[in-house]
Length: 294
Image 1 (cartoon, one colour):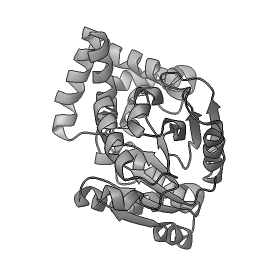
Image 2 (image 1 turned 90 degrees about the vertical axis):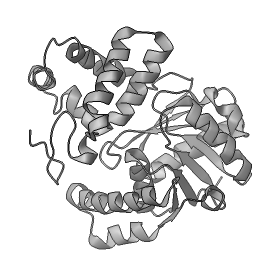
Image 3 (image 1 turned 180 degrees about the horizontal axis):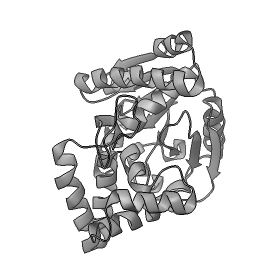
């Protein structure tokens, strides 16, 4: 299977990063989102990513221009996917949103298109039926700041065709990722099986008013030598994603502490537009170069 044309569905933090990295490595990329205003915001994200690539990877202006020339935009789902060999879904982390999205996508996507979800916590089998092509569907999960934290977890479900699985492993390598094959479905894959409990423990300390986020981060960084603490990581991941995952787990488990954490994230941060690094403020404030200033 030869992948040349890639459509990325969703232009948020990770969607925009996946699209830019894929275009940077020479693939034709179409970015799809629901509204033109979201796509215009994505164009601004790409400009910012170009500067990050120059700083972090010593990319040239020509490299960035070449990447941008490989990207097109569409708010029409059928138009966006019409030539896609691979469609990477990065829509909000909500099972109902994803099911509805795949039901609509299945109606307009070419038969050849492989579907991959970038879901952080949901299993592909939970919405494989809605894809209309479960054998050509799997998970392809990236870490935030993909150009630096270049891991790609490739996880099949029981119905995924082995050739499709191997094709996506090869694709991940082709866009500069370290491919991490996962042979059985696992909630949270590898990365989030480790990360989510860690972040959850930090949030629990905060919600219970044991310590403030800065003290919790300082404790972790000094005691372990880690470059960032859990609340700085929350800001990088994005507090909307943190809220969606926390609320989903709270709804599923009935855990009052998770419910309180979700409520606190919404009231104190999301409702105030403090979404993390991307908006310049979350648990910390950030300058234009994304360096912590608080």
